[in-house]
Length: 193
Image (cartoon, rainbow, N blue to C red):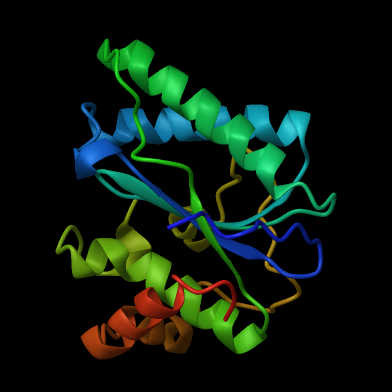
């Protein structure tokens, strides 16, 4: 099946995901992979400025929500994935490719969809039983927001006014509904939601 034609826009944010080759786990501790993620996000941001909304690192893949003011998602993602792959291969002495293919994307066209995708991203470690509560996962931008810590690049919420320490918002984020989670995952395979 041919790859769908990329839509370059600055109007809507993208959900982007990329998975390691053969779904293999990264061969480093997550804290070390997270350090590499930060370095690569910063390099990419300096070359092609973008609005990072959310980022979640898992054992063999990552998710991000990103908006590209210069309508250049392809350049931003090429830069990030190239640097990320090179750093990972250097640290692990791997000679083969790191990722199973190019990143997958979908456009997020409404505030409601943006909130649902945020919840889906942040719940990935919860669903994998890596944590008890989403705000305690150290390898996502949520932990920075929750602790009011500066991130390596600016974080943007696309005009949403979210209070990340609000109990009601955190309870909503932590309510894992497998059916809803699966539905969002299925919808993220579409061009837009």
